[in-house]
Amino acid sequence: MIRVGIILGSTRPGRNGEAVARWVYEMAKKRADAEYELVDIKDFNLPLLDEPVPPSMGQYSQPHTQAWAAKIAGFDAYVFITPEYNHATSGALKNAIDFLYREWNNKAAGFVGYGSAGGARAIENLRLIMGELQIADVRAQVMLSLFSDFENFSTFKPAPSQEKAVNAMLNQVLAWGGALKPLRQG
Ligand SMILES: Cc1cc2nc3c(=O)[nH]c(=O)nc-3n(C[C@H](O)[C@H](O)[C@H](O)COP(=O)(O)O)c2cc1C
Image (cartoon, rainbow, N blue to C red; front, side, top):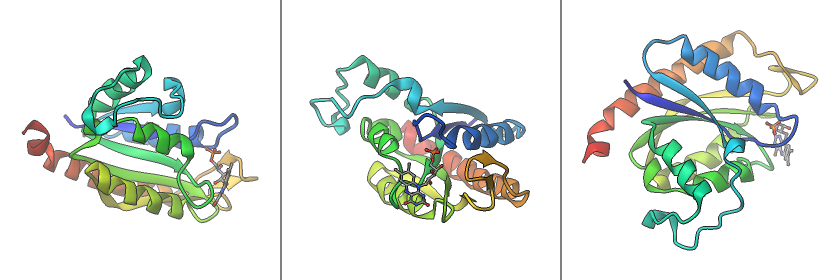
């Protein structure tokens, strides 16, 4: 069975990302088509990148990098839950991504963004990064608006239609995550 990591990409106290990630995870768990796990980057306490050797060499010296690498290596595909900070993804998520390289290769990914413009610019930012990591990013994406999917910009109340968007995105992630399996074994 395909294993999908749902990666929570915001870390600040009071973050909206936690409710969004839990909502995606609960919905995903109801599907019997893959194994899903919620991965909170906050739990890994990653400092700003502190590895002396470029991650593409795979020589991780720090225990926090090794723990993060072991977690990410175990998945076939990812769903990135991304806030939009200054028209990009969060610095914390970019930093966590930068720590690793081969663990990401030949996997699939989908996105759930949130912000005043549905997190669209953060998702576009992540799509640029995916190419360099050899991650196949699917077209379907979930865009949650701070105006219509949250109350007072802080209480998460997603519009009913958003559930359909999550499932459409997950369908594509599973399809590509499975299709890339031969490359991961090679
Ligand atoms: C540093 C910072 C920059 C932000 N910049 C944007 C932005 O460029 N576009 C946008 O739509 N929302 C922006 N916002 C609003 C966030 O999308 C909103 O606060 C969201 O809840 C952040 O995710 P989090 O609560 O999980 O941290 C910004 C918020 C922060 C804290």
